[in-house]
Picture 1: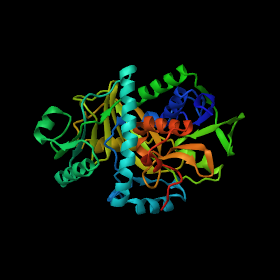
Picture 2: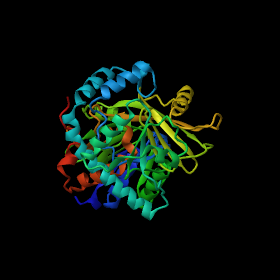
Picture 3: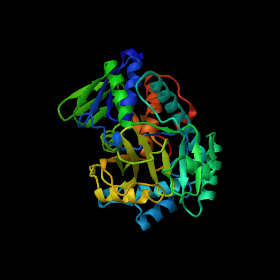
Picture 4: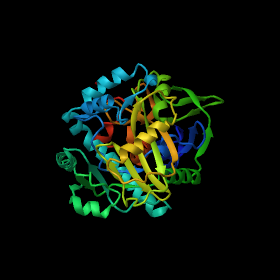
Length: 415
């Protein structure tokens, strides 16, 4: 079948699902997006709003096991495990630990770079053709620890090895140019290609583009799927229908749906939390990563967004923890000048679909090749969504994809 003859169901109405739906609709496919809860989008609205092609190092990298353990013991909030995390935590953590090697980074970084570069091209096109706006200044990583200089140098060496444009900046000049930074900051690295945008606006643009191409949206819950070599039957809480292909872009809920097809996608829900402060003075002109505090920031038009956290939990835990918000703000004060009193807006929580090797799942499920996975993006869903949409559309249309893209396959070897 040509793309114009195919009908495709996309399960999930977040940014990844919308990106896939748009690319498929541009190919001429008839597309249905099934989303639970309407246009709430979950994690798509709660993130930091970064587009960072520099993020080519997988989350499973050398040193991350030690970092996670220190966060857990020190109760910093950057990494934690809730009582509802369940029995998957132990095997997931073991696989994660086994993946934290230099060889794994060398294998994954080129694939992640292709995915992020593809996303960058799509986002640049949207900023030129829609009302989507971005920060104009490049992203900074700021370091406050005693090892700041060495950590900054290591970061630059690591990413430039894979073709990322990064450099360490003159500290005093940089502090003078961004008054929100305290003199506790001891080193700064600039990533010239990275920037921020309003994640809600990006979702809005994608949805608007989908609707203009005739994409149908259904607000109901997919409860099961069954697949043959010719098509996929989708069953929801109220209906069922047959599609030529299904795109599984349901985030942390993808794992349970994959089980109905006899597949195992070892995705852990990792909750992050964000807050947006409208009254902050000296708002920076760029996105900032507080590297030692593990806090991402973004100066949006309507407020200063701060996001952090990687708390293993259940797929039903969407609660917002006000104490976690207080801790987030207090931790950010280690590097930022923040007012003593301010209005807190948009306390949000989102569940990140985390794979144990730090790579998303993009491609046909081994036992159900008409179901294309588009999930497991962890903390990088917003910045990887546009590229994921491109790759999924290529696969369904029959266009070839590179050897690097094949590394995202759900059939890849698992430790």
